[in-house]
Length: 211
Image (tube, rainbow, N blue to C red):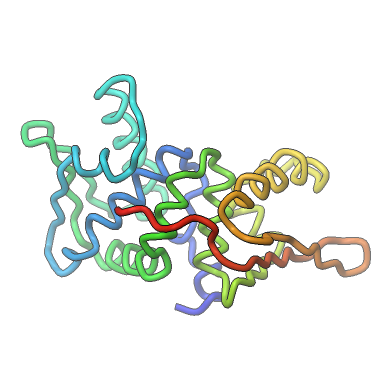
């Protein structure tokens, strides 16, 4: 799928995911990728939790987050079958064409090193931006139309660009600069209006962590 088609594909966006939900969701993808030819994927809840590195005060809190992920995915993929079996402590996912396409796309772009960095990021905005850079970027450059950036980052509609800078973009960049060398953004204008953002960086700073 090319970049234009990808950014116009609503299945690509998970605007409502929290930071912890993103980490768990990507752990589910990477634990599923070798089983996409099966009718169903069954994953141990313990393995998902370990892979995500997310901490919980109670096991029930973890289960509620898994349920929340399933509910939010249904908004994007209405026919998704996403079950938690508490008798066997497993997550069961039916492998539809939508799931196969989504999981394959994400895993092709996200290397072990990328997912390691992703799970180290704390804020949801940093994770959303990192995902955009890795999936949509080419040769460490990523050009995003401003409307796509706002939608993918789930930015409130009433935010002016000064609000976006202060509350979304600058904090996300500050966090990502701990992991991406020389990360910078150029604001591309037509007249006085910002029409797109051009992100550029060199390489990842940290070494990969075993996943």
